[in-house]
Length: 86
Image (cartoon, rainbow, N blue to C red):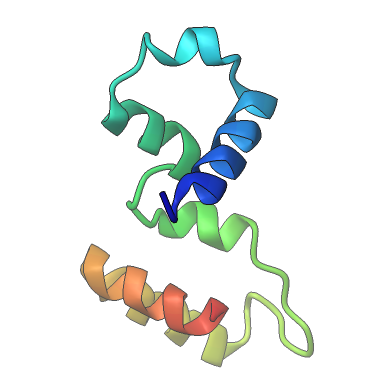
C-alpha cells in the first residue's frame, strides 16, 4: 500500500508520546484532540504569549488589533491565524 510508509512514521511518532498499548483506550476523536488540541482560539491566551517587536501592548494599533480579533467569530480567528502563521 502506498501509505504504509507514512502510517509507520505516524505510528513511530505517536509511540514517542503514548505507548501503543494505551491507544486502544481512546477513540479517534480523542486522539485527534490530544495531538492537535482544540480549534478554539482563546484571545487572552494568545495575548499572553504574544511578543511584540517594535511595538508595545499599549500602542493604539495593537489595542485596535486585539479589539478586531475579539470581534471575530472563531472561524475567522482560525483563518487569520492560519494566514499569519503560514
